[in-house]
Structures are given as structure tokens and as C-alpha cells.
Picture 1 (cartoon, rainbow, N blue to C red):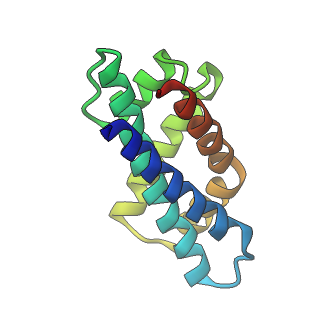
Picture 2 (cartoon, rainbow, N blue to C red):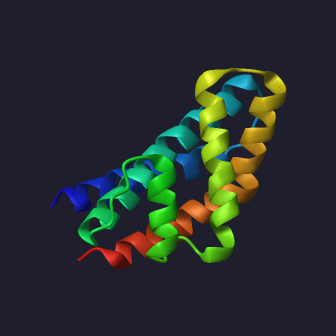
Picture 3 (cartoon, rainbow, N blue to C red):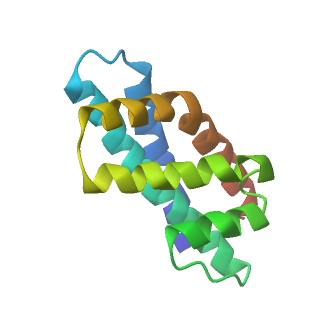
Length: 130
């Protein structure tokens, strides 16, 4: 049951991220909204990976371990592993500092690279859970 709730939370966060990305970025506030939605989505995503991994008998206590387990379980495509690890780095950068150039780079990555990976991961997780 908790796996379904976790997946539901991932879906809600992803929906919000999609809504934010669909709007034009007019100012720093818009960019900050995308970054915050990215942070929420990433958190819910790795926790979903963690729950699915646990069901498969794989311990994944950290975001990094959860991403590696997701590759093993084919929730993340093997060719996307490097991008997911870059996503983790960007997530860590957003929570520890704020610089305009970093915010612009991360927001760009979210729109161009990360959103499609979240969508694909959500679909795979949906199929992995009963």
C-alpha cells in the first residue's frame, strides 16, 4: 500500500513540474518555481525507486543507491544512468547554494533533459507496481 502512495506522490509532483515547465519563464520567480518543483519531483521519484527496490530485496537507503537500484531494476534506462547522476548533483546544488548562473543552468536541465526522464521513470514505476 505504501508503494502506491509513494507513486501517487511522485505523480502529483511530476504533474506540478509539467505545469511549471509549460509556462514561459519570465523572471527569477518562475525559474525558482521550476527548481522547487524539480526538487519535489526528484525527492518523490527516488523514494519511489527506494520502495520498489525494497520490494525486490534491494537495500537503497540514499538517493544515489536508489538511482543505482533503479538502473538494476530497469526503472531507469542503462544509457540514462549518467544523466540521472547529474540530476542528483543538480538536486544537491539547489539545496546548498543559490547563484543566478547555477539556477539558470539547472532550470534549463530540468526543461531539456530531466523532465522526459521523470516521465519515463514514472511510466516504468507504474508498470512495476501491482
